[in-house]
Length: 321
Image (cartoon, rainbow, N blue to C red; front, side, top):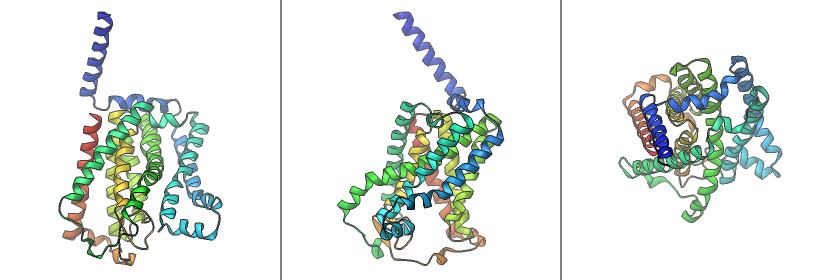
C-alpha cells in the first residue's frame, strides 16, 4: 500500500512539474485526436459545410414555428421568445458540425470537448468566478445613467427567464467554442506547433465574423478586436486545461451579462434585458474608421481590453492554471 501511495504521489509530482515547465502540456492530449486526419482540405470541407448549414439554420428553424406571429417574433428578435429562439438556432449549426466531423474525420462530439468531468468542472468554476468579476464591475463606477431606461417586465419574471436564457446561451457559445477553440484549434495545432497559428488564426477568424455586428467601420472594428482578444483568451484557457470547459464558462458569463442587463428598445437580441433604453437609430453609431482615434473611443477600447484581461485572469484562477 505504501509503495502504491508513493507511486501515485510521484505521478502527481511529475504532472505538476510538467505543467509548471509547460503550461500548455494538457493541450497536447487535447489536440492529439485530430492528428489522425490532419489534412488542410478536410478542414476546408468541414468549415464550408458548417457555413452552409449555419446559413440555412434560420430557415430550418422557421419551418418548425407555427403561426405568423411566432415567425415574426423570431425574425425581429426583440421579444423574449424571439431572442431565445435565435440563440437556440445555433444548435442546428452544432449538430451540423458534429455530423461533418464524423463524416470527414471519423470522430465525434466529445473529441471536441475533452474529458467530460474536467470540462464540466472547469466550465462551472470559470462561469461563477467571471460572473462575480462582472458583477463587481457593474457595482463599481462609472455607473450607467438609468434615468431614461425602463424595466420591460417585473423583476420576478426576469429572474425566471435567467435559467432558460443561460441554456440558450450555452447552446450559442458552445457552438462557437466547438468550432473555433475545439475543431479549428485542434486541427491547426496538428498542422503547426506555432502558437500564432493554432491560437491566433482561429481567433482572428472569430473576430472578423464579429465585424458585421457593428453599425459602422469604427464600431465594427471594435467588435472584431474585442472578439479576437476573447478568442485568444479562450484559446489560452483551452490549452492550459485540455478541454473547452473554461473557455465556454468565460464566454457564457460574458454573453449573459451582455444580454440580460441592458438593451436598446427595438433592437434585435434585447428580449431578455432587464433595462431597455429608448430606441436609437443604428445610423447614430455608423462612424467611419477615423473615429477610432478619438479619446472617447480609445478609452472605451482600453476599458474593454482591461475588463477582458481581468476575466481571463479570474478564469485561470478558478481552474488553477
